[in-house]
Image (cartoon, rainbow, N blue to C red):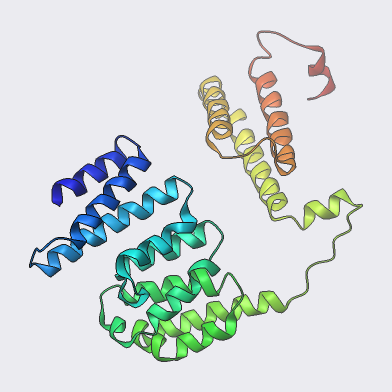
Length: 279
């Protein structure tokens, strides 16, 4: 079984053949079910390992919807699923924006009394709270969980207080009315947009760095080239989708700064009519 686990991991990580990795996990789990090996702990470790790789393979194949049902085929009852596999399922379903798909299973798992004694119980409770209940605004269930049996088993007193603070903050945000936005005013829409605030901060930081570099007398030409290289690398590596309208302002402002720095850097070698326009 150890060899098959290594094969599945190689197919997943090195070969990037996710379907083959999932098929290997399936076959190996079938073999485990029919195995007469007496070492139950070792079989349980192999089973958990194949399930973890199988969940990853399903996520890569964009078949995450079947991850929980596939796990339950291996363990039959959700209460008996190992903590580390439940943690993976919570993270997977919350990552794809469907936390409700794992909510009932996680709730049942957490309320099984004997699970409170297993390693990883506290992490499952924390993930369930932060990635399932809080994002959905289910503050009442979150409070009950924190101060109830689950919270007493999973968290210390300080952790419970911190968790309650997080839930109360989320509840307050839910109660607050949304800010008034005038759809006809472009300036107003930018002022209430979180990305607009980031754009202004980025622009201010770039201009500040630009002024510091270009007023420096020491190796000014090298510093200019370095700064230009940094800006270009930023444009290349920051994940922005140019097709989204929200990115147009980013690209426009950055291009304006790049043009200004480019002309200032190379004005000794050529001049253009736009120089006289103060760009």
